[in-house]
Image (cartoon, rainbow, N blue to C red; front, side, top):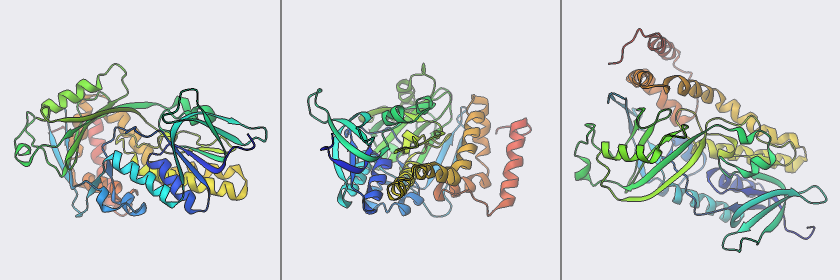
Length: 408
């Protein structure tokens, strides 16, 4: 084992989080191996806010559509439009193209890419981590090994790195997501109202808060230019996600459109309480549980978390002090912990049944709610510059909670 290759960092998983971590680390002067299975595309609406595009220098050619509004639909088909008044937009990306571009950027910066499946994490006689993996295309018995001064597990919600190295990572609660990528309707077909009275809009995301489509989450239609993502999610194991998506396609007149591919995966519901093993392993992205409750948004948080984990690994490599690894989670929760807590409470209360979903959609008619929602989403910061608006929203929410306000 002493003759095995040694890397400063082995990043397991080449999604947005892992690719970002690898890119940052090689730019900081480290020798990095990026190990990815390849060929796996996560079910994802593909929305990226302006903050992500700016902070991570995403080129415009990766933005396949620009969404300027959202429409939310209640159980009783109450439809509320939420335009982005600031003249901004939410970018939409195709994950297969987007993720590969991120991996290639890391490789171009100097990371070594290998395609294979992570097998296990062990240690050699000197205590250095050893990453075992099966190369793509190799016989099942063929396993290769590399040494790593630090390991970043960015291998998804069911992270094998986490389960082998981080106590408690196997207890993460999940929503199971499923979507179908279809051919977007032509402009002529899109102009025809569907069964729910709403026509397809290539610049609008539609979000359905209906128990029949998801008993505890939501269903969506997100346009991607030539294609569209139609999906749903639920933590109820007996709920048929595929049937729900079929019902949604029929309801919206998209059942006749060509299906390009189908994908499903678990989505974590909250950040892990611990991201590192106190020695030389740290998690990032879905492996660390950084998907926002209620909204399911994960790309920005994955990339931001990947950057923080890379910074923590960099400090650890410079100092040899494993306490540096804890800073990734600490910094993430300081920046976004409040948002995650608020969204978690919101999901727990408003998504419980259709009566509450109806009230939730009605609240979203309020212009203060819409403006603060978009500002917080677009810029990834709690908006504190409009205290009067926050007070008004508080009392409006309270009225709905105690039943003084009736849904329209």
